[in-house]
Length: 329
Ligand SMILES: NC(=O)c1ccc[n+]([C@@H]2O[C@H](COP(=O)([O-])OP(=O)(O)OC[C@H]3O[C@@H](n4cnc5c(N)ncnc54)[C@H](O)[C@@H]3O)[C@@H](O)[C@H]2O)c1
Ligand SMILES: O=c1ccn([C@@H]2O[C@H](COP(=O)(O)OP(=O)(O)O[C@H]3O[C@H](CO)[C@H](O)[C@H](O)[C@H]3O)[C@@H](O)[C@H]2O)c(=O)[nH]1
Image (cartoon, rainbow, N blue to C red; front, top):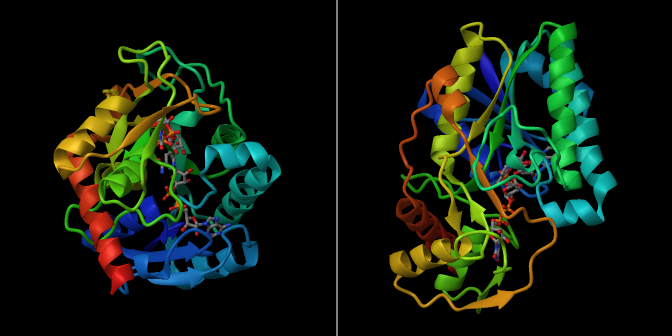
């Protein structure tokens, strides 16, 4: 038995690969290395370099490795890029996911875990978002993911396929043992940008908008640590293998931090000034988005271990230093 991880050379997928290997699972990664890194895949896992939408490749890989479950992470993930290249996003995130689901069904693989996103909700009020909230994504990225949720729902009714859809909130931090972290080139995520600024790799950071209807006028987000997120997938895998029915869950800590609060924590943890300038709002940013996590706790028994913004920032700083030393070396 093996678990197939698409996008396992990327930021979040590589943490899932570590969690699986730590649990003694056999792991096959399929990744085209478009934004991922060969070095992010440990030797104990098999890396197949290729496109997860290539049905011949996937069906061969499923058979060769005795795959019993798929964890599908691979995608394009930059919201503004999805606005300028929607068809590219619908191809990679939606059309190829359709092929992958079909390949899994043909191969008789009935267990599927899908990386969805809080972006499927669109604008919400500042309260906690429950999974049954109406879904009104405001970006092609969010829509490209929501269509995969629908395909899984419909395929689950028609075929022997059960899925857990995990809607991640804002993912941050790194493996506490320092084995993995976010290496994304030209990253746009707030915590990554802020720690790069703290370490002098960027001159300053921009705070996008300070006139939102939030306590300090900057956007509120729910920052979820990447190892806790990987654990949610491990809980989902156990649940599916035990025969659990298809399920959709948020993954977040049910607590929001403003952009200014995040920058202050980065200043405190790094001891650096972190120069920040006020900029206009960024297109497509909802004011506030915070998870309700009652369902994932109840249904999957998920218990977060790293719900501490200072710890998350310290991990991101540590990883950034390692990256720099590696590049410098
Ligand atoms: N980072 C976040 O805050 C966040 C939030 C919500 C949801 N997600 C979702 O989590 C998943 C992983 O995101 P990430 O932050 O690790 O991104 P990432 O860019 O680091 O990882 C994506 C991986 O998929 C690979 N890939 C892309 N297209 C491929 C293809 N056609 N065939 C094979 N491999 C392909 C890339 O090379 C990369 O290794 C994505 O599905 C994303 O939508 C991320
Ligand atoms: O340099 C920066 C970067 C970000 N921000 C602000 O910080 C907040 C968080 O922004 P990120 O870019 O870190 O994350 P997003 O909330 O835009 O989006 C992330 O979380 C979403 C779900 O909530 C999606 O899944 C998406 O893929 C993922 O990138 C936003 O208010 C943004 O405007 C800044 O002010 N300056």
